[in-house]
Length: 272
Image (cartoon, rainbow, N blue to C red; front, side, top):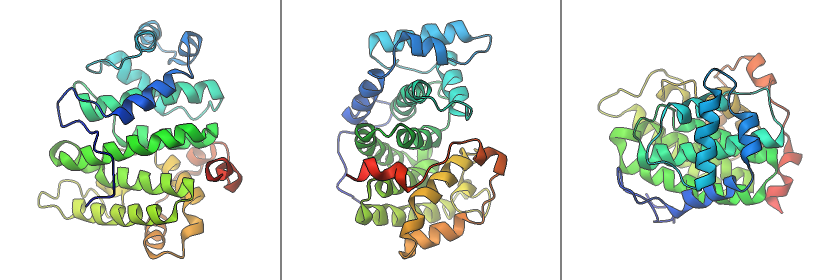
């Protein structure tokens, strides 16, 4: 199924990288410096090597050919940090996730972080940052990822509905109702196709979307974005189906309450 997407995609295991990924990475690099890297790399025994690795990525302005422990540990620990919502930290996390997105999709060597984590954090952090330009850059990067997931079902088939859902939320954030409805339908159909695939390996539980991955998928963040972005579109059938299905999923209040509040006012900058 085609949605008028960009065709600047890399085929699996090649060196060609979509320009959309490079544009996103380049923009994120502009908003961090060595001081931000030193301040926000995880403070565990590997701290010095994390700082060295991420400072090197920033200085070179290039994403490495493959991931390593210093990259994956920083991405993973930063991804789960819900105690810091300062601008510097959110910029740092966008920087690390722009690296993770490209490594997962186009490199894949020694990648140990999950594909849907950078998706939800990039969108959520962009809303917190109120960065309209960053949201503009997420759209083609997410579309490229969706194409690549569908092109390689043996490796990334599990994530196709997640990226379709991420694009649903991104379109809702921009106030693009027709595109949001297209991606909402794509989310439902791709989730169903994955759940009923011949292997059956992806259907881990009956829970819509969250039941087709073995990861916790930062569920509180997904639900927070769902409640913010889709409730006003409930009168449309595909959105109503998604909202009803996800309403059955329970998120621990403590996890959800650790994030600063978001409301309709948070979206105004993206719709002007």
